[in-house]
Amino acid sequence: MDVVSRLLDVAQVGAKVDKRCLLGSTTRMDVGGYPELQAPFHVLLEGECELLVGSRALTMRQGDVVLIPSRAPHRIVAAGAGRLRGTTETTGEAFVTTRSRGGGPAVIDLFCGHYTFDGGAGAVLFRSLPDPLHVSCGDSADTADMLTMLSAMMRAEAQREGKGTAAILSALATVLLTMVLRSANSATTTSTLWTAATDPRIAKAIENVLAAPGADWTIDRLSSTASMARATFLRHFARETGMTVGVFLARARVMAAAELLKSTDATVATIAGQVGYQSESAFSRAFRAEVGTTPARFRRRRHGVTK
Image 1 (cartoon, rainbow, N blue to C red):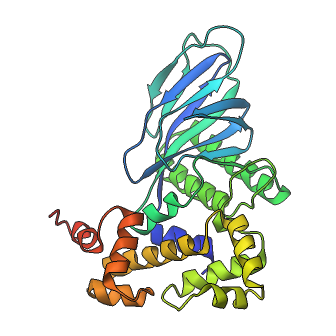
Image 2 (image 1 turned 90 degrees about the horizontal axis):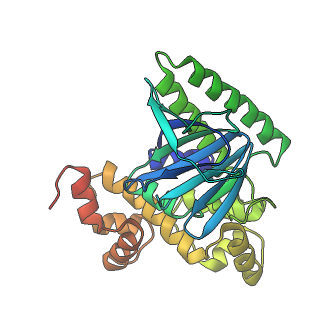
């Protein structure tokens, strides 16, 4: 199984389209923070708008996708002359339709939704992504063609809004995330996306670690399997993934451990060894740093025990 498919599988990703926003000019729409284990996304089907999150201002154009792993509150602005106006909402069977207060023709067509994910591998995966993650899906002809088809299907289903619409839109939103995770880094975004490493030697190293996280992956061994000098490998790995080899190894091993904690009755010490840690204490520290709780507590919560 390829890297992106494997990650989406272990992360147990779900998707929901919350709103279709048909906004006119001089309109702002505030989006509140999302709960834990959720990440909001926006895909712009038509027009141009600005997304403000924290100190960042992102210009979204047709075909752009923005994912906010931190769940932070943010604002969508459809620019124009005059004072910004708010929005009104109409609740439908499958999603909410948002329009500019006071009416007028729409200048943007924006789908807003969120992804849900598992508190173990899923939380680590989304935590490892750039925040915000802004990808222009029109950067390559292949991706642009796929996005055009995806957009047309989302629009058609949204306009139909009947039986099965919510399920169909959720499935299409999952396809969208898959496209984002495999989109190569481009000149239109400063994001470094480790799931889409363009150097085949680094991509192979990532595949090897995810396939066998418990192996003795020293830097020398990884650089050797990539047929690169140690210093060259470290430099290229950081450039392609946005993180050090040590951070990546820890995250890959914690994701694998979370799956074992859910699916087996093996002791924490046994699982620590299976994912490459020499001691249970070192494993527990790494797990807590990535997931926010100890392996034992994580397992108890998965079985409905809160203490």
